[in-house]
Structure formats: C-alpha cells, structure tokens
Image (cartoon, rainbow, N blue to C red; front, top):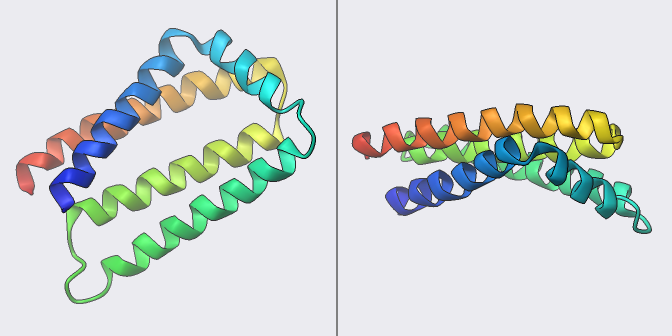
Amino acid sequence: MGKYYIWFVVIVAGLAGVIRLLLPRRFAELQLERFKATNAIAKAKMRSLLFLVVGVVFGGIYFVPWGHQSWIIIGTIFSILSAAEAYFQARFPTLESLVFQSRLLGILYLGLAAGSYVMLARV
C-alpha cells in the first residue's frame, strides 16, 4: 500500500508543483476568482483545518509499533503542506500574495515529489 501512496504523491505533488511554477500568475488569478464566491474564505479555512487534522493523524500513526514507514512521513508532510496552502491563500487573498504563494508552493510541491520519488527505492 505504501508504494502506491508514494506514487500518488509523486504524481499529484509533481503536477501541482509544475503548474504553480509554469503559470503562477494564471493559477493565482484562478484562486482569486474562486475566493469571490460566498463563504469561500471560510470554506478554505475549514479545509486547511481538515488537512491539518489528517496530517496530525498521519503523524500519530507513525508512533504506533507498525507505523515507522516512509509513506506515513510523506503523508504527514503532504497534508501539512496542503493545510498551509489552504490557510495562507484564505488569509492573504490578494493577487500578488497568491502569485508569491504559487511560486513558493510550486517549489515545495516539486521538492516533495522529488523526495517521495527518492523514497520509493526504500519501500
């Protein structure tokens, strides 16, 4: 199971990183448009809380006797990174800050994808 989850993270995080780095302004414009809907910022904050809870659960699983596996660490990092993305996009919903966040998160997602790919050899 762990190998399939790591492949999932490699593909999803890789695509997310590439899109954010190649088209940061366009991606930020789409995000800004999404925040114009009613209650969109509140929903984004709730989504960040949900991702954070998932990250804490993954982190907690790591400490059970059978939990010392690399895919759990990758799941924790991926969830916390997603939580930070949702929170900061909702907290700073201006075009320039969203462009900056897009570039920064693109680098972080690509780093996560590369690190996950390297971890595949250990699974």
